[in-house]
Image 1 (cartoon, helix red, strand yellow):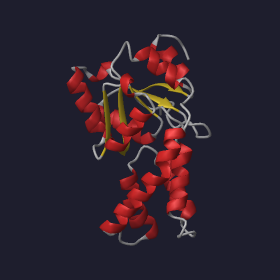
Image 2 (cartoon, one colour; image 1 turned 135 degrees about the horizontal axis):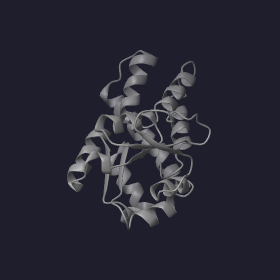
Image 3 (tube, one colour; image 1 turned 135 degrees about the vertical axis):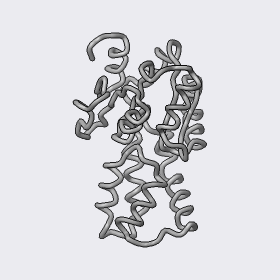
Image 4 (cartoon, one colour; image 1 turned 90 degrees about the vertical axis):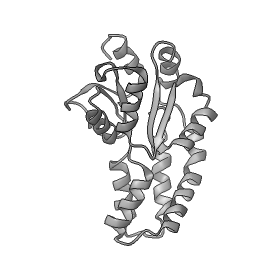
Length: 206
């Protein structure tokens, strides 16, 4: 949502499962259709429903390590989503901003720090905690009712977390992806770049 890292993660799944070429297209499609879902849940689903074999703990751990090694450099080098840096500069001084992600929390904190963004956020939340639980914890911490919170995301998993928490949602369309958000209950605005989200928050039409 802040960095254009989706392609890096897709490439990582292709590399991880290159040894099962008969299933690679289905695996990548599953990954692409479930952005915003924890990599750990994806691994379990891929083994159970696509490869149809057990996933022993040692192999699960190896997959997790290899995936981290494949993506960390690409994520650290990924460009900002258009308008993201300006959005953070503008709104971090005016409203409390938080990161809620399916990435592991420790890894996420390291990325935020190394990219020079730590000062923009009051907190960083990631796996293994569920997004809906993170949203609820943030509301409790800030003392905000759901109507005063806006959850911004680029995946249907993000939208579902917002719905479960009862908060409004702003959807961001990743370049090349279809619009999965317009017309859904609770969606306040759909944008492609964060300049448009800035306009929305300032009461202007994107």
